[in-house]
Length: 117
Image (cartoon, rainbow, N blue to C red; front, side, top):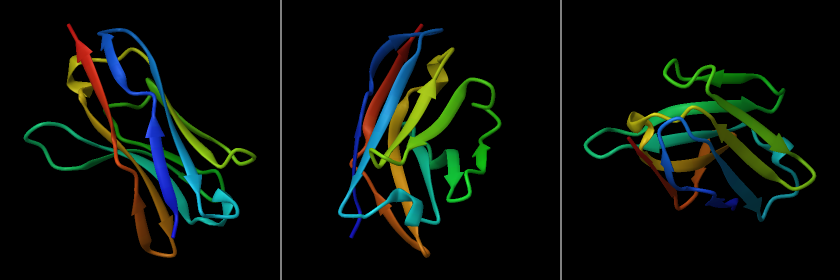
């Protein structure tokens, strides 16, 4: 069972930056996963995909973060990252790390990102 722990959330002013991290454990290598991604849940909204990276290093972004957010990974550290630049108030949400292992989804506990105007 893959264990995911997010960190790096916090309070930031609009236009600022944050980098989220997701450390994966109980797994040999994150490269064994089909893909990993970041999702978010804003108050009153459903969970939505923010960014995804596949085993083959293909990346995909939600339109509302494209050009501002970058997903990456460090396979030596079994860690997934989300660099978030030019943050907007509407980016305020709880961000969750996800790992897809042959269709079985693992989730972290979430990290709160709050962007003030």
